[in-house]
Amino acid sequence: MGASAASTNLNHGFPAPGPQSPTGQQVMNHVFFLSETEWKHAREEETFDLVIIGTGFCGLAVAERALSQNPHCRILMIERGPFFLPEHFQNLPLPFVDTMGGLSETFPWTLSAETARGNGTIRWQHGMGPFIGGRSTLWSAWCPRPTKKEMTGWPEETINNARKYFKSAEKLLQVQKADEIDAGKDQRSLLLTSYQRPVYGKLQKRIQQLLEQGATSIKGIYRTEPAPLASDAEDIDGIDFQKFAVPAGLLSLSDNQAKAYQEGTAARLSIVTQCVVERILQQDGVATALQTSRGTMPLGDAKLILSLGTLPPATLIRNSFPESRNIGKRFSAHFITSIVSRVPKEDIEKGGGFGELELAANYIAGIAKNYEQQFHIQLSTLWDKNPEKNAGTARRYMPDVVATASMAQLESSKDHVVFVSAVLGELDFRNPNNWFLANPQDNNLTTNSLLQITENESDAQTWDAMDHATFGILEEVVSPEGAARVEYWHGSPDKGCWKSERPPKEQRRVDATVHESSTLHIGNTESAPVDINYKLRGTKNVFVTGAALWPQGGSWNPTMTMVALAQDLADQLIDDLS
Image (cartoon, rainbow, N blue to C red; front, side):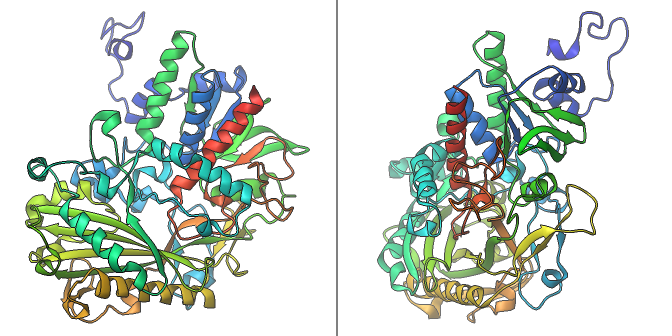
């Protein structure tokens, strides 16, 4: 506190009062981020080994891995936005759910009229989180490992590299499977736990059992597992369920490096915020400097890592390296079906009663015709005896708070188990009408791209197959007494009713895509914008990480695999520095 409140000549209000209106950002800059003076010094005097644009999952993964291998690695991280949330919004009090969407989501592109006004279901693509930690403070935190078959279309080397780092990526993201959250507790311990928070216990085991017995009998479904959730903070701060977000880990890494720097055993981790990178200055394929909203940042001999999502790096590269080929010509994402259903509790409850509030989360993978038409079901299951009383606690422990049951749905289902199915299907990456290309009508260097998303016959097949499989799971697998006992929610989440009929397409199919990918796909042929060493073709010191690399989108949640490949990139760069 003393360092913040006093200086040599201005001491705790003497001889005059200090600043009276500090902002939250100023406080964070004073402790963790570069001040204006320090940023000027970094640009004019300092040299770096790695310069990372973006502070999301992959930016953290590269920095953390590089510093674990070489604490003296000099790293600068550049973030376009300010500090917003200190951790995942689900870990914060209930009202923070309202931070989702609105001003916390930006769209640095123009949507094509064909998408916004066309005849398909898809009308838009979810945006970016322009803050420290990126979208990590607002994500669902599901982290399945893709199988080798699910990575079809990927270079063999990239598949092997990803699989080599899956375990370390899961460690960084604090992944645990849903059936491990309360594993090993006896009945007394589970009962005591149930008075404090929701339990992943009998309901989790029962739904797993039903899926293990019957899921693969449904056409297209080939595997299921307890959901891998980035939520295990017990070894970090003693909390047994806490959704992972980048800010805490990044600030802790920065703080540890600062302390080690004072002891002479490490380099500082430098982070600058509210600094928009507008263009990469380059000569003969060598990135020499960054043109930013806060002045030019010379790169010297640094390696430049683009870790700012899937769409913004394509815009940055197109403006900086106009000779680069196939930038944004390939695009994939996940389209979504959302279904809320319920089954009488008495049908599911076997071998003893459920607690007051129990949750379950399971991941179910499927394909339409082949592995180029993948989908998966994120099945969240809820039993809540007293929804109004449990609202705050339940929200914190929900497996997927982005897709969960509303109060109206729970209040009307006190004798039922409620299932929330978020179903994600792979948008066909081969569709030539899907792209992220230059927009000549926009003169802003950070937004001058045009995004188009359309649906083709392959997408229609995948979407129909995944809807059919989801209804099969709900009516034939997790409802022991069959389809006649299943009811579906019709209408808006807060104003609707339960009916025995399946919800129509126009209600269950979401008009926005998520998990965009493939704009800078990786490959060992010249047609791929990025080579298998993560380097942008035609450059000597520019590297790419994140889902932009995906040759094919698959259907699995991408974050864990993104982090695995980012760690591989970090190791390669550190090896080059030694």
